[in-house]
Length: 49
Image 1 (tube, rainbow, N blue to C red):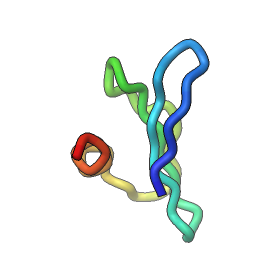
Image 2 (spheres, rainbow, N blue to C red):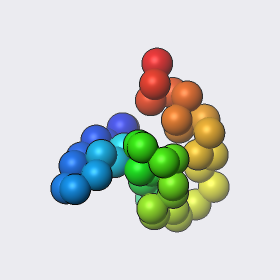
Image 3 (cartoon, rainbow, N blue to C red):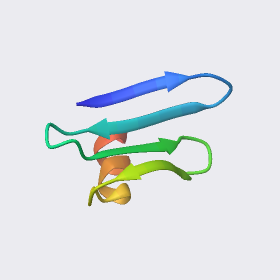
C-alpha cells in the first residue's frame, strides 16, 4: 500500500503487512523513516509509475 501526505513537505511511502515501512521526502529523496528491508529506489520507481 502506498501512502502520500503533506505537512510542510510532500512525503510518500510504502507500508507492508509484515510491518515494514518506508517514508521518503519527495523533493530531496531523503528517507525520513525506515523499518525493514524495503528498497527506497524500488519504492520511488514504483510510486512514479
